[in-house]
Length: 197
Image (cartoon, rainbow, N blue to C red; front, side, top):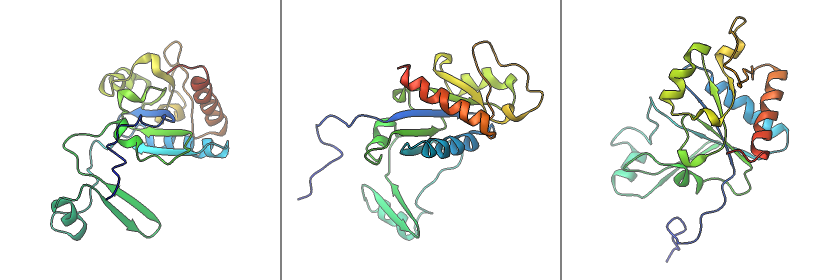
């Protein structure tokens, strides 16, 4: 009989650092997340990522197709093995949270870059991406970002020549430029080292 590793009573493993890259659609989240992942890896960190989908569901495949039939038959999970990829799908009655996702993190991962809206349990700091600085308040409200958790602003607005000045106490950094990416990564690492989460 197989041991149930996901429903045991043992304490869950310690979480790696969670860095959220939040923003509205087309604000530059994916670009910022990808360059931060690359830079953290270049600095020697083991990095994973989580992507929160809001608009387009990602699922096994259409109803009645081969892999979907496994879930429809009652499989608790389905692993899809593709050329060069491994995907894990688990039917859920509601949106999964950090603890659900964390049990799938590879051991030894130092940082998880969470693109989208992170679970409130994630703690950690947030890089907020905006198309224009005037979008900031709407972004904070829609994505439920606590101002105290903002490490810096980035995204499309950071690459605009006349973006304007960010609100007091916040830095606007262009992660697509080497100096901006280095400064943003330094802030991310300092944020965690300062114990602010």
